[in-house]
Image (tube, rainbow, N blue to C red; front, side, top):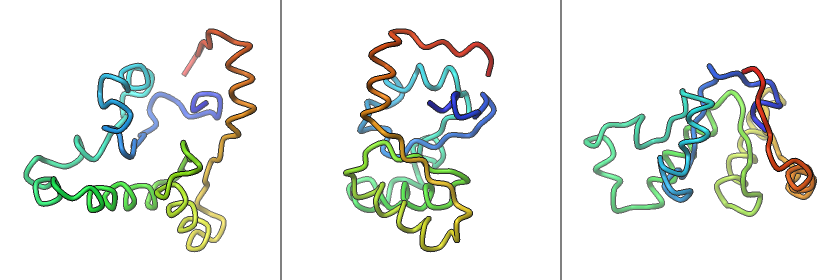
Length: 123
């Protein structure tokens, strides 16, 4: 979806809650297409993350700050509180200049069911 929207391999992508998705191992395929993929775990040092380590809500705030400051934001789970909060912030404070991408999961699922392999010819 990211490539189809025209984002090239030089695009910096921040993945909020990367550990929830399985961490680096699960993100390897995406990382191979987009080498500038980052998470809070590799943006911040161990020392910087240490005060937040045992506080999941405070770790989520780090993701929130990064997502609200991004040039573009894509919702991956419309039912998540983080997505709702970030989307609301970007609408209220963005004045229409903070794009938020809301993929239609039903339509995407239909596309993926028809196309078992999706190739990116050029990034």
